[in-house]
Length: 101
Image (tube, rainbow, N blue to C red):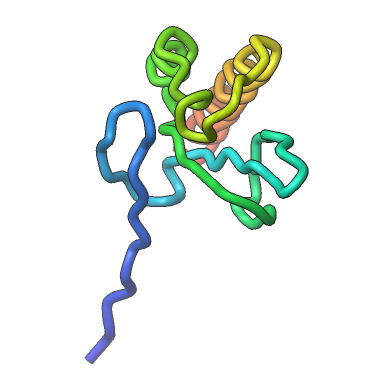
């Protein structure tokens, strides 16, 4: 009998919904207090997840969710980078999805 593999689930800090880990983007805060996008999901430090969805990123900016999660002010520039990164990932997924068909 084939054993089913467990799919790791994580909660988005914006919507508080559970998603498979591969559908989320990790944001990490290291010991020096630097917050960065973690595309590999393996960077050291405290991590938080956000769904790969532009509406979630925009809500995170308006509600300053990342500021509250890491209990420190986050520059507006980081939110710009986050939005650009999510747009890039979504565009790549769309592009490669069409290639598979």
